[in-house]
Length: 451
Image (cartoon, rainbow, N blue to C red; front, side, top):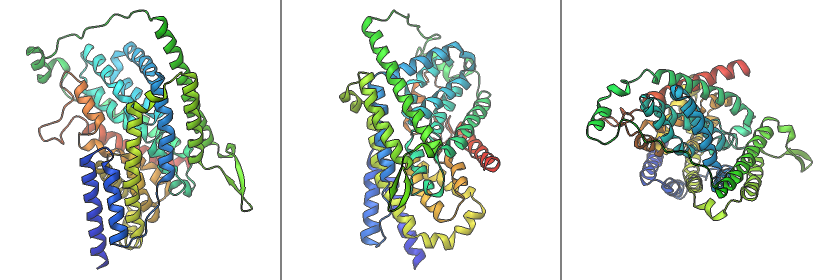
């Protein structure tokens, strides 16, 4: 009877995840909350932990990033990246993905890649390189930047005090494991992808578009004009905004890597150090204020940008879906311990598979972490192993309907980046699986030799 009850609850949870994913936007959060209602009021489960710290970190970081966008800082960084990539067109399959990865690593959101993808596609096409090669790796690299970024909601979820932060895992552990693992995975994927598919001049779809006049042989180059005094002033403010934001990133990394630098307080006769989630929240909201001042940014423009909207969508989604997952798994933890604990402990990679599958349904690394990591902790999986498995939450490339994938397909005017006849045989699968396997494997090697 107990098993049947758990399976019914699981079916309801998965159904609501599916419905929320189909609705999109804040739908995940709304239908996740419906799940909490059903589990609590109908099945009598105790409500799980509300991911308050993660939600507040999202608010703080997204506010700072939105202010940076309003100040023109993101456009300024894109301009610098564009100049760099145009100087090295022959290495676009390597440098393009590494650039998108670095952007997302610093900003904590994959939405910064939208400005870089058309540049990568243009450079590849103009140099007769099949755009599919750099575009697919760059799209996947954007996701990898999130699982290792000190600014991302996913990393915030991992180091929150009720998850791995309560198991002795600090921000520096995430950075030491995930950044090298992601970097190596991107290089491996780019090396393989550079040998995939026909050369651009031999691609049938590219030739068809040329014949039908849908595209021309060469893109039109725009002449560089001198900046007006107003543009120079805006660029000056943008530079200051970028420096302010980078200061915030540096402070977060510093306090996360050296916990002794964080303030400590006496609480009930015991010394308690300022938690990392609170540290990030305080620093990034303060940095947002600094960006508004030095970057002369408009507050109204900040909240109207796509960065702020995406961040608020993520916060609502995590609120509902993560609370539902935590309620379900913790409410049935004894069942999972007695039925699957031994198997998962003996074969930890099975939990990585579960993370991968759940991320396909949730379309969110942070929501996947908040939904499944409590189960991993409850089953007694080594916290360091959970850190190494972190890149497994990037599985949403599997179904090609994530915004970054759709954008990459549309930006590639040659048609080489595509969705296949059977939908799942699309351009991103190879890069996605290579980076997932390699990053997790390298992560395991790092925790084996460094810890």
